[in-house]
Every structure is written in C-alpha cells, then in structure tokens.
Length: 250
Image 1: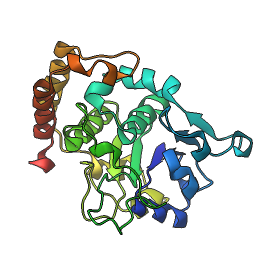
Image 2: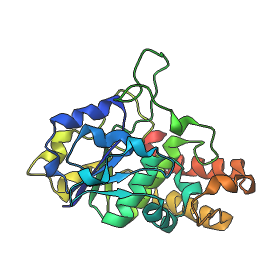
Image 3: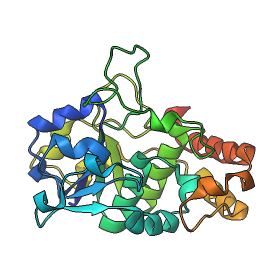
C-alpha cells in the first residue's frame, strides 16, 4: 500500500515529531513545515515564498526535492484547474500527490485551516502566520466544498483521503483517522475501506459536468489574473453540489 503524508503548518502538525515517518511511503511538506522533520521527500510551495524560508539546496538529501508551479500546475489542470480545486496550498499539495504519486491513501496533518481569534494564540507551529485560505478569493468560497471535491477525485482514482488531526474543528471534510491506523503493520486497503467517503457519485458526476460546461480553465494556473471572467454565484452553486454529494456534511 502506498501512503502519502501531507504536513501543513498548524500547531497540531508538531505531533509528527513523535511519529516514525518512515512508515509512510512518501512525506510531502507544505511551505514552512519542512522545519518539523528531516524525513520529508517533497517540499511544495508557491512561487512567491521567500527564498530565505526554504532550506538551502546544499542541505537537501538525494531523496528530497522542491515542487513548484512548474510541477504542480500541469497536475492541477489535469484535475480541472485551480478555479474548481481551490487556490490554496493544502489542496494543491493533495492534487499534486494524487496525480504525481498515484497513492492508495493520502493522510493530512496540520492543514485544518482553523485560525484562533485571540492574538496571543499561535496559528502556526512557528508562531503567527497569514490565514491564507481565508483570504477573499473566488476559488475559496467554501473550503469544505473544495475538500469534498478533492476527496471525490481521489475516490475516482482509487485513493482514500483521511485527516489525522486531533483538533476539535477542521475546514477539511475528510474522515478522521487515528495515526495508529496508518502506522500499524497490519494496515491494508481492506482496513482503510472504512475511511472511504460516503459520496453520492451521481451528484459528484453532475458537479464535474457543470465544471466542464462552465469551462473556467486557466492553463497558467494564475487564475487571479482572469477572475473578472468568473461568476462567483455559479461557482457557489457548484460548491453546494459538492457539499450535497457528501452525506457527512448534511
């Protein structure tokens, strides 16, 4: 079984320090999450990430590499493009892992996109960072819908997605799973069947059809340069379809 761990920068992500990450086939870290472990394989980040926040090239092992827009934009386009997938790295990392690595399971940690209201509470393991997924963006009207979409596309490609978070709330709609379920030597696709999403595939296919019908594709991935061409209400309607397709959100 090929398992992928995706690590974000939420405070909860610090739990990975106590895990044996070699039990995962591949470890993908987003942005600053490389600081949490030396056992990562791919560091995925946006093009505008400051170079001083990245590990120096000479410090990388032969098993480590950076994933930038050059690699993830074509994969994202294969799955419908950024407008429908959602323009934030948690989703971009998931689609890239799904398309480039063909896993059986993708497990998320530190990507709940929940930000404390109190200034004195840390939003990220390294302190306070930007609440990027909450910015005003036509592709991020419903983080829950976008995560259902990713889960549905993974399901179509014979992949299960779970959330390893222990936080009480999450904007990710993925089923919760205990870390022991993935680190156990007895873990198998049969066991992971219980984490398969309860999706209404008729509605999933209708949502995908509506996306194709609208044709909101930006091959460059720079959708914000053309966002005046997109109808927010029509995208919101598609979001509602994604939410409706997943029984656990209703």
